[in-house]
Length: 81
View 1: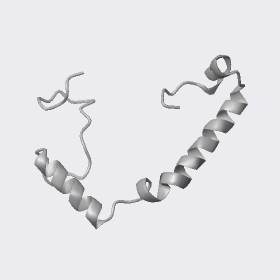
View 2: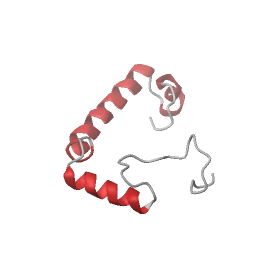
View 3: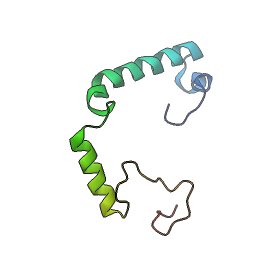
View 4: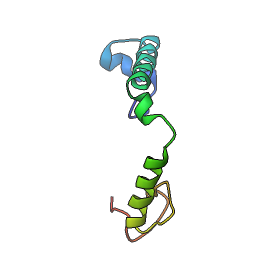
């Protein structure tokens, strides 16, 4: 799942068919949502927003809630690959 490979590529490595691999990924995703959904899959509250604004202000982006991942930018502060 992390590498974005098609489900039918796992049949040789894991000795399971495509439909079984898809079922396993679906069960895994449901489990992740059940375990972590309340904490991580929710809208930010006022405390989260204040923390994000302070963090980004310290990085030189006052008033910004999101982040720049440097994928499309050539910027001096982007980490070098």
